[in-house]
Length: 442
Image (tube, rainbow, N blue to C red; front, side, top):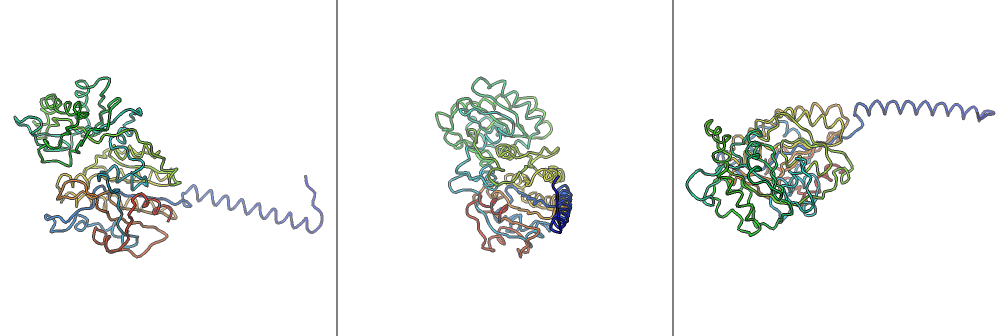
């Protein structure tokens, strides 16, 4: 035990006691506040897939963003940085894969190896380096006497076939075509996966079915020699599926049959760094879509499973909002992805696209606002990944509007956010992946 002598010793003891007590109080307050989450910055991205658009004749020459009543989104826009960001790098196709990877801060020119491998990752498929993965859609082709090559693709999602029905069809496909080289895996709704052992990505053009809805498929079937076994399976699948009991029952209910597989989106196993390594914070993903879940899985993010999440306007909006808030109790960052706006663009449904924007505004944002109140500070970024114009029914590469709201750093924004008001601000981010760094660190 040390021995203190004189007035100096008294003061040292006095200040030592004072210092120890002060440290205890500070530690107590820090622990108390940390337990309540008040000292942690939280980050939320709300991604409206395909929300941006071109003027729509059916909407009086306005875009869905211009027509939609979105008071909560506009509340943020009035207090946020607003501008345009290029999410699709020049030379890449404007898919949700490259666009969402870009928004998450991954340079797609370095990390992108194809769409399907990302979906395979979400399904827990362990791909070997020599494996090639392909997206396997269940589509509706015209039921006529024409040869397969002359049929028309009537619906890229077979009336948004249920996951349960689709599983039976993919089971039949696997039993017919599966072997040591090809293996089909069931996914969600119309979205499934084919793994090709020791395959190749040199397949010519394997066209996305949502890009050619309503068109004759003749010019959209790859003529590459390497693609021949894949195209043959597509042809043979029509004969297999057109009279399958699942499809006969669907037709009896007035639904389109899922009468063919459609293979596309080929790629090899991705080699992405983790979100935490790149940005220094932990993150999670809320989405109904295997693609987004796969990106998150590859990036080491937590992935939420939300009952009733469908990827369309009948999705569980409130469930997704609450799942996001739950993730924030364990993570710094959450990415909430809504597919409905994109699907409505592909389906040429302008009224439903407006409705989807309004439903997110009224059923998701208020829950997020309320749940974020307990934190001292937070940021919210809202944007589409790419445009899905009603008039073209497919994706476009145009820059998209974004807003970044900072609770403790509100700025003067715009009265309402849409494609034109965002452009008018003059704010433009040309390199898409940099928007996440800007959001988190600036």
